[in-house]
Length: 82
Image (cartoon, rainbow, N blue to C red; front, top):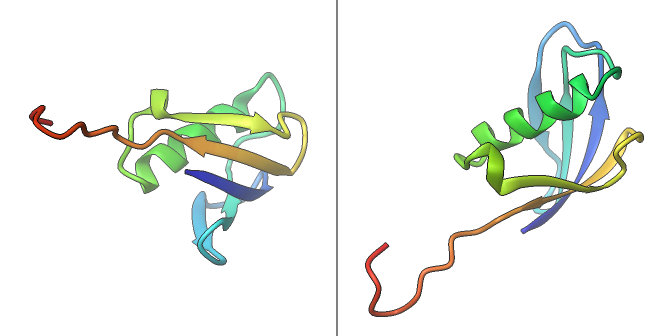
């Protein structure tokens, strides 16, 4: 799944607000330095979608407030237990 994220950094409280099926507004408490905000974003999105941090990747917008994030979905194959 690919989502578009608008990030607000240095917020008093972290949170995610769904705008529509593909767009989210995310508030982060971290500063945008030394990759802190991006790490917090990945962790927050992983928690929101009940995924591992390894399943969430920023694919575009590493230094921008507008980011494209890929969330890996489970690949269940018929006949193989999940």
